[in-house]
Length: 167
Image (cartoon, rainbow, N blue to C red; front, side, top):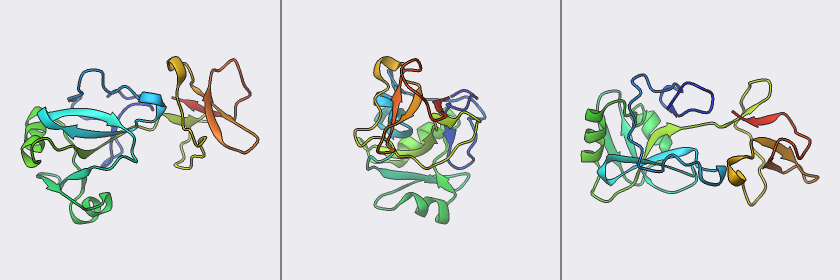
C-alpha cells in the first residue's frame, strides 16, 4: 500500500492505510494495461484491482459498521453512511466478507492515482487515447499528447512530454 504518490488510498480519507493491512489476491494489484486504479472485494476476502468504470455493487461503512448495498451509487454510500468500505484489519475484512452474498464482487473504497504532473500536482481531468493506456512491458511512464490532443503513455526516451508522469 505504501506512502508514495502512486500507492493505494482510501476514498473516505484520501490517506494511505494506517495499519498497512492488505488482502490482495495473488498477482494483484497488477495495474493491467495501466488502467486498473480501483479495487473490489471478492469471495474469500481477496482484493483485486480493476478499472473504475467496471460495474459492481457497493460495500459501504459508517465509520464502525460495514453494510452491503445493491443497486445504489457510490454517492449513496458517501451521503447516507460515510463512504465505501475502508478495511484496515483482518477482522474488518471478515466482516466485509460476511456482509456480501457468496460469490459477489463489491467495490471497496480503495483507489490509486498513478499519474501526477511533473510539478507534483494532480488533477482528475484526463484525455487518454480512446484505446486507453497499455504501459507496454511496464516501461511507459511518461505522458504524451498527439495532434488531436489525446494523451498516451510512452517510453521516456521516445517522445516530447507534456509534464505528466507516472508517480
